[in-house]
Image 1 (cartoon, rainbow, N blue to C red):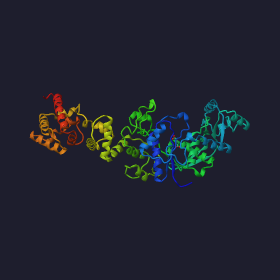
Image 2: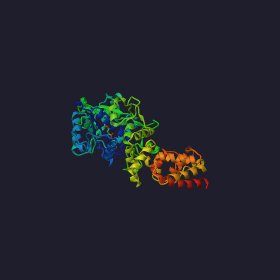
Image 3: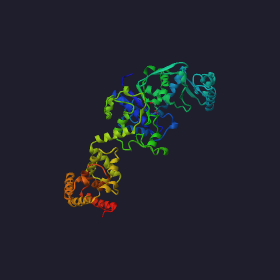
Image 4: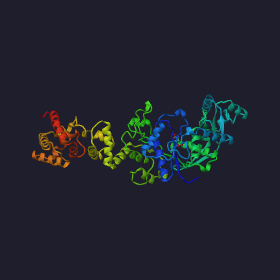
Length: 513
Ligand code: GLU
């Protein structure tokens, strides 16, 4: 085997790709790039009954959004094509046959009823295992118990059958996981898993191992939920004579609920209103409300950075890493064994950090997209000015429009508390002087400031006394970015209109006409 690192992300297109799946893809990608290797996308679609239309595209779109580039895959091609298991269907049978011939697998003819019956009997006998295994297989209808001629007759007659692996009765299967260290599993706890189904399709186990071998995969990095299957895979490598080419395994820690109690689920996301999917998924009715990080206004770089640190740490205080920096810093040794708690506040924090790091002009482009979509007119220079003013104040991209509402339309509601406290005679007088002075001029923020100072002085008061109520008049809100700059963006005509409108509204609210 060459020394090139080759890893694969091998999702099944059975529905929406959970954030844990994206993390698996990301860690595979980081590991491959760190070692100058290849990242392969293999679509594992042998279970036709669970196939969901649109899922494969969703997987690819999600990876693309994250900036995870695929070296070999269904769209990219590669030396080991095809990369979709349903297109490799004809390839697996011969390995199952090889195992049959060598006595490490066998035909089983049991019907669904017979299998149920076996489980019932075992249950009644309070047996530890309810499975088809090295003990129960001796009581069932398979090529180990039936005479050879009868097996042949059944095969020739087209009777449905499956092929099962013959797990040795008493043995320790050992594997050295890169994250967990040595894992020992006694074969008495393993069952004779089906390798080929009665529809002629391989099961996940056979197809996965055969493909990892044929595609020269060097490291299998996948979720902890696959750890129980790993000993079976080790056995398959051995039975197929590929033991010395077996990839190294790394089973990633689970993603946990925010309180750390149990696996993060769709229900947690729905209950807490946070996204756990990279992008929106609207394929089935039931999933209609599943939110995506993308649509919720997360930047993909922030999402990727957040995800990378869910289960891995760089060993330094630094938390902000671009994708390239993650590639540099990533090591499997720093992946933790313990589950990683999902913390949406941390995701929001990352998003804030990335928004702050953006070029204001890029943020302005995103704002322009939003205004266009909402049919709001906003020229480029206005978008840039707003982006600069809100950059430090927003958590998400859509906040540009929602928090910057007052840049596009005069407020219709005002913060009541401020009006009651601050709408005094002198404020009204300052408003009126100010409006008189600014009329029909093109003013900069500094000019608004000086004019306001003059207007306050002429009415024997200080700017500080009227600043907040003026903000409420212009924006409807009690706080926000530099008011002078807001007025510069709005222009004197709009500012004048808003002050006049607010004066009336404040008078009415306080009956102070
Ligand atoms: N097809 C499996 C999945 O859906 C792949 C598991 C593995 O990486 O071996 O996650």
